[in-house]
Length: 361
Image (cartoon, rainbow, N blue to C red; front, top):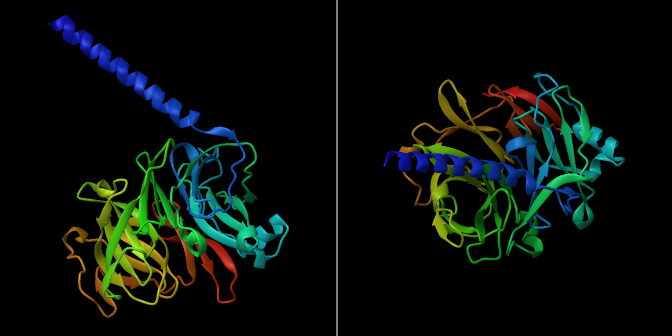
């Protein structure tokens, strides 16, 4: 028996090595050199090996683009660029009024920040990517002759809802999670797309109880979300307009299924969440969320597993509580820069945008 067992172990080890090499090969082989046909540049997220995922709402597609940006060669200092919208406009040969910054993502492998840009307004706007390294160098990231792959989303929202066909993306453990609207009856959907891309299955319809509206909803889009493990299980914390915060277990996101999320907070109506990150401070976990009219929120996640789901109408706030970071006004986008700092895009009272590094509160 011993030789047979030993042979079996050798075979298993060999199979594991082959599988590992195939997976590694698949990751690089799935990206082919060319020029991505982005119709728009929206939500951004980073995966392994400096791969940047770009959501294209107008094209109802997700692009995986090899940036070649895998090593920090530009120091570890803070990033700060005043009037960044004007500087981007100057580099692109246009005016600030023709520039719209759609999202911000920091590559954790290098600390370089990437921005998705619309040059121009309306359906004819051009999709542009810019980047800023730790020395503050701002440049366009060329999409000519890059390695990329593309996943097309089936049955994405059309017409006036096309701009929310993709509202947020995130890479988690070999999958790209995509939030947005579809043409399904359960229009609010989350999709889990394996990477490397092969085919894109139907999404999962999401139903939530919206406390300030006092009803169940299936058509309100997730505006932003962040992955978060609760008791060892992966969840997505998703924020909606007006502003419910909802816990959605990743294990339930099956193609074609319909899932009811657990509303763990109502953070105030007449407000739209813009962006969010999760971080740890003094051994405790927090959400940092930028909003259209309620400032920058710091939401404690202590005992989130014990919070009762909100299932009845509320006047304004309920569930998890938050504090407003009053000395950081006008934040419209943010991402983690490192363990101690966030990178934020702020709009001042005059409407000018600034990219700045701030300590995590």
